[in-house]
Length: 167
Image 1 (cartoon, helix red, strand yellow):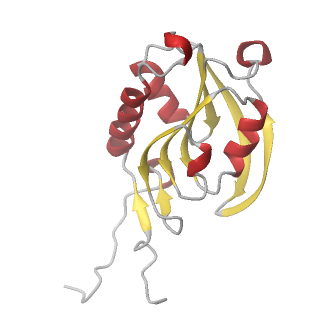
Image 2 (image 1 turned 60 degrees about the horizontal axis):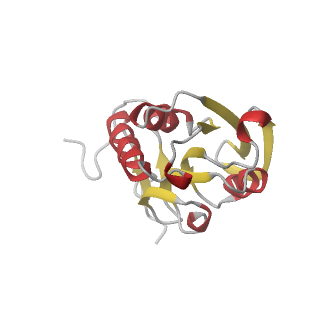
């Protein structure tokens, strides 16, 4: 049925919810570093992975944080994934002991590209959709493929008309 209101297949995530889910991700990752060691570093996939990466790094006491900037969306249209900025190559190597964090895996195009670069890294996202889920080692919440996630950095508070009536 195409009579849906725009927000009906949307999953709205508040800052508070993102914080709770990112902490849950950290708890799930605790003790998962290879060979019972600590994680060497966190690599945040920008831009969406920066907030979860900061929270995970704080919770797991990881002090070395870098970013990889991958562009795979043009507004809400998905495009070919390309690396705009890579992390320190000496730090990351093949990814051993590296924790790569993103907010969401959707189709998996971004993680596919980053996984090719760092095949031994551990990939974690807060949210996962079915198409991209096989590319993630650890995640917290799965949402349907046709759901659009509205992250707090993409929203502003405003009045919304009620479904029915004006009163």
